[in-house]
Length: 129
Image (cartoon, rainbow, N blue to C red; front, side, top):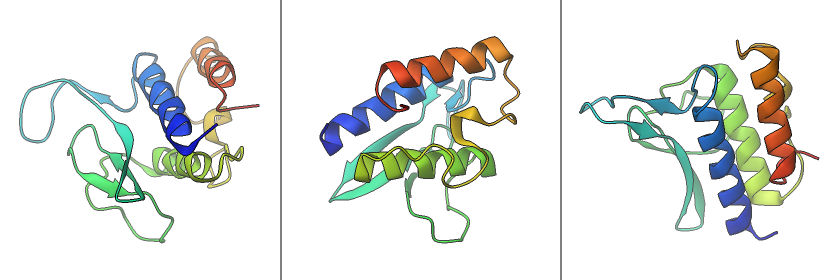
């Protein structure tokens, strides 16, 4: 699978997550206007960015130990985004590498059924093994 294909896999997974349970990565209004918005990952000039659904900021996906300017989510989601970045860059399974247990994390606040749906979908599209 190419880097572009892995990027598409992650964006499909973000969309899937945004449609279930607590609807992470989705908002019905942004910081500047009342419009629906969905987060996504993108490649720009050879670098990987997370486009935040609320701030619409492009956040460079790197584990630099600092807060990400423009990232409107907490630590659990930043760890997941770093996992997504690792997968896109290398193609290697990395779920949970950056903490919080990745998609298997018990802190999501989803029902067990929804959590399992997300995990199964991630396996189906090739993000999880």
